[in-house]
Image (cartoon, rainbow, N blue to C red; front, side):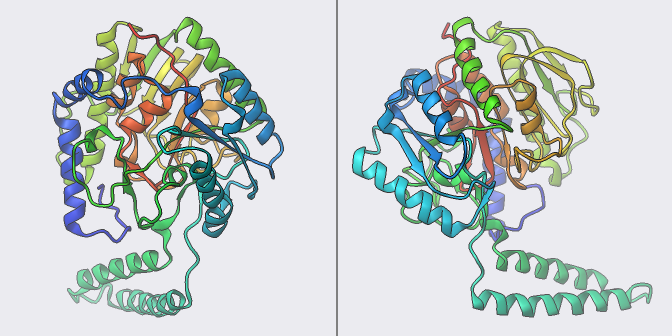
Length: 440
């Protein structure tokens, strides 16, 4: 959507995606119409997710994984029969073959053997399971094709280098050809077929679906009532109880339950880039930025309307800085890539996310990625991508925070209703049952 497309999709499908997202976010009435529909009409989300509707996945091969799963089961009153113990690498990346053999197959058997799809609505992924699923291995045919493409790429690069400064005006054509070849190389390497573990396991009950690019999310409010190609009809909601250490995971569980008793207290901080209305951003390549910046403003307005807590909106290009966000209860902002800014004193039970690429690529790295750093410093729920997601793959801020602050839906439901895609890069970290606000 932002002019960086490597999934092999057609120009027509890209335009359709842009048009859909613009209609969803720009329309002032969209949120209110959907909001009223979901409260008064939809039977699917009239009640919050229940404890016995959650299936928990833990890793026998990871220290603390099963122990944390059992701790969560006890704290939330989840049936012990809802725990599936897997055996897979404890590293953050697993192969596609291992994922299919050691995760998808046993989970699918378990659900179909003990439950119906109607009785399990959500999967909780525990600490110790991989974050990312690698693309499938290349075939011999892929390797042969890649070899030819690489040779063609190098020849074109040499030709362009030789022609530079000669005054020959065919450089643009050669450069465009080089871009096409680079996209073909990426497609042959199947780079667009990798995804987050959680986003793939959401489709565990789907027998077959294309791995290239993303799969439209049936739960997403913008997709409701629409006939969309490749939209999975049997998806499950997913949330992950994870973090840099087992102690942080226990704290997430305990803080979530404690906050539900008192209600989340503090200030909501929203870090936009431009004042509203957004002006001077008519360039089509920045349509995604304009849409999400507008949605950040709208999220702040939704919370202001509830009167539940004060809000602070930063509408300048500079982000919140050190010490500017005391008692931070809710947060959404952007764009500090891979560099957490320690501006926040997080309230107990805080929820927030930062819109930037690859902020959940690792929870164990020494790099100051936003998801890891926010969890270390006290939030109980955050989300982010494990790789480049493109901005339109993030949950819509207005929907996510508007649903969360209403109090009717759990964290897992707010996420499922507000994010557009499965089989892609996003991860939700937090207790799927968490409801930080009581229904008014």
